[in-house]
Length: 82
Image (tube, rainbow, N blue to C red; front, top):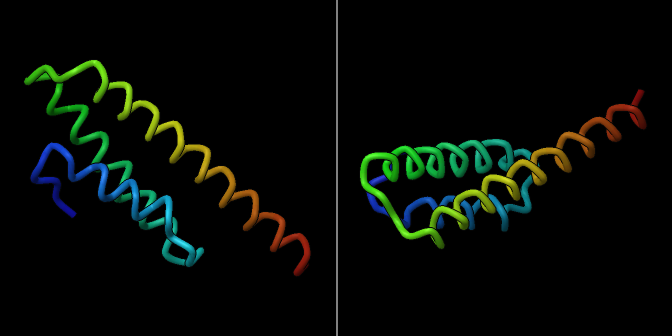
């Protein structure tokens, strides 16, 4: 996965947020997180609008929450199975 444009991170983020296949979700989250972090790194060298910086932070926070929900569901499924 490579980020080539300033808005690519939004595409990766959307894919993660709308993913319904729990087997694919960790990969989607990882791709989105990497794309967002790449964009944040770009903004260190080439300043951007405050709005975009806030969007990046919000997206990272949302991905973190999504990851926590996924991990909780996996943990609950293992407890029920075991």
